[in-house]
Image 1 (cartoon, rainbow over the protein chains, first blue to last red):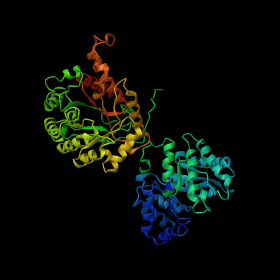
Image 2 (image 1 turned 90 degrees about the vertical axis):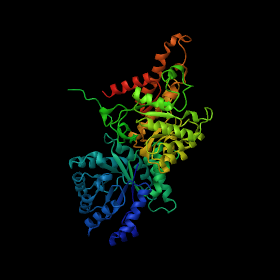
Image 3 (image 1 turned 30 degrees about the vertical axis):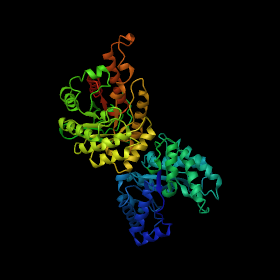
Image 4 (image 1 turned 120 degrees about the vertical axis):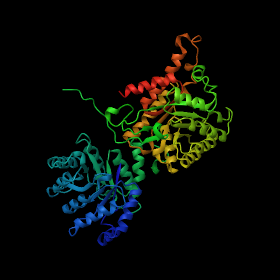
Amino acid sequence: MLIIGEKLSIIAKRVREAMFAKDKGPIQEIAKRQYNQGARMIDANIGPAEDGGEDLMQWMVTTIQEVVPAPICLDTTNYKALEAGLKVHNNEWGRPLINSTSNDPERFPILELGAKYNSQVIGLTVGKGGLPADAEERCAIAAEIMARAMEYGMPLEDLYLDPLVLQVATSQDHAAHVIKAIKMFQELNDPAMKTVVGLSNISNGCPKHVRPVLDKYYLALLMYSGLTAAIADPAEVTETAKTIDVFMGKTLYAHSYLEM
Amino acid sequence: MSFAPPKETWSGKTFEITIGNGAKAVKIGGENVFSFHGFEGNYPNKPVIAYEVQDIPPDDWPQMAKDVYAGVSADPVTWAKHCVEKLGAKAVALRLAGTHPDKGDISADQAAETVKKVASAVDVPLIILGSNHAEKDSVVLVKAAEAAKGTNALLGKAQEANYKTIVAAALANDLKLIAMSELDINLSKQLNILITQMGFDKERLVTDPMSSALSYGLEYTYSVMERIKLAALAQNDAVLQGPMLADVGMYVWKVKETQALEADLPQWGNLKDRGVAWEAVTATSLLVAGTNLAIMRHPDAVAAVEKFIAEMEG
């Protein structure tokens, strides 16, 4: 399973300060650490970045790829920043992933961007009308996004469907809806649609010591349902991901499997 | 409409390993398809057959395997040259059988002398094998490796019980290495991990999942090899992407079918044909399973297998 390292996010104070100061040190240190912990793609979340977003995304992509042989998940709603980032992305270690489009017409151009730059795109199954009620509603939105993708010339193999994980503390029933949605998404196409989640959403707002427990068990269930990728903290989830990959027959067991 | 055969393609590929130096060096591995499936992808190197030669006369080989080397097998250098010059061997596997405590307990220094002499007498790649006595091998193969420095030979076999010293010897003398585990794909992967964790490059490692003869467990070896190949190709499992070795002759030429006389078991037919067929069929099966390098004994069996390889390649 692909772990997309979530730690380079503008929400974190240290990262935000480094972004504003264009200080490569902390960014590269966190990127390297996540790679060494098992992330094979690095999320670069610069927020909406209304001022200087293009520069900032380019700086993030090149700064990270200077030290880590992995593709980048470009995480912003800013179209121009996405395009700027895609222009400098080094595809040597894999293609980039845009985070994200949705069933909101304002976000459709992102699919065009994905097609133009041969990038993969996350399709978040929400629309303009608020949060989906259950797995079936997520599927209906997914089908809409898939139709848009085809319209804009993006291969469905390049689309990662994201069912939108919600907080277990406030939306407990959605935990099961999302698991079901991961299963149903795959049925929407042959070959099966790829899927991704923002894993730590599940434990948002929960006590610190409980969060890793929630994240890890939830990931195990999602992987059992066929999840392709998770945006997560590799320090926390790599062990789970490797272990479930063994149980699911994706990698061959050896006593040192955790070290590989 | 013409028929287009379906093709299976894989994301992984095996490492290409060169053994020996100069014009006669051989390359094995490097494919991204199953054996002989060149029509589906890259299959750059045909499997190679190495002739087995021992440091001591083959007294424990069955008569018919012994007979073909009568006159040359008293001396390993003469024997090895015979294989290369008369039989056209593409590689020689020198087994230091006499170092086994039960078979003469020849010293490591003496074994190293033999390695040196054979290495300088033949121009084909050398595979240097211990006696499969884990403890003694860890002494013998260290000296043998020193004697083979610069030859780019393939040294083996490193096993769970003795891999540390043998890996260090292969590292220090710039040799390729065979890692052998006993018919267990998970232990095979584990041994390869442990060896690479010592700093040995996985791209210099040959995996021997342990051979077995037809009707004596061949299907186990076949299955393990096939699954290793599948892990290498489908799961892109880097520690299992080395070429594979099948040490065929030593398993075949001790089973009843390669020894029982026609006079005793007339329903089994002619012994010579039977023995040769037993080795050829065992080797061929393992080539199909994924073997890149096979070690064999009888020239007629080698000829049959090489013919098979040539025909499979078109």
